[in-house]
Amino acid sequence: MSDTEDGPSGGSLKAGAVTVSDVQELMRRKEEIEAQIQANYDVLESGLLVDDEIVEFGSVNAENFHSLQNISTVVQHSEGKSLNVMVIRRGEKHQLRLVPTRWAGKGLLGCNIIPLQR
Image (cartoon, rainbow, N blue to C red; front, side):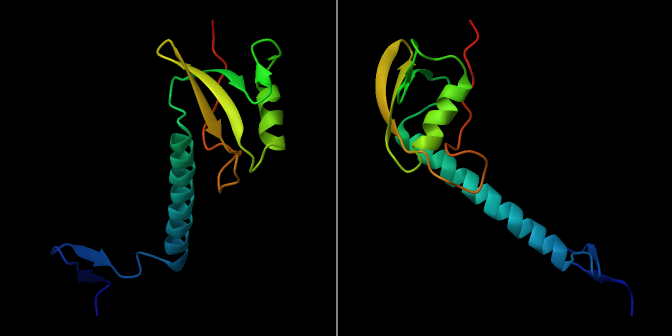
């Protein structure tokens, strides 16, 4: 018997090419991807969009903002609770609500907040 078999498209498949650990790795990645999609969906549901300029995040605003650690602290203390977030989008202010929630990835938001460089 040979080490190869004909595949469904006529090509050859090497016997034993896919291992149990390969399948387990794919399943792990699938779960991570699904978690990221859910986290991104939750962020989108809140109304937060790419390029929104956050001017107020819970108790953090332009007057008391010193670093992203300020926002991180608010997020950590607000897990599962609704936060008011004010953004400027295309020159207009928008009031949003965001609920920091645990998910399979890093953090509680499912997105990255980066400081605006002026």
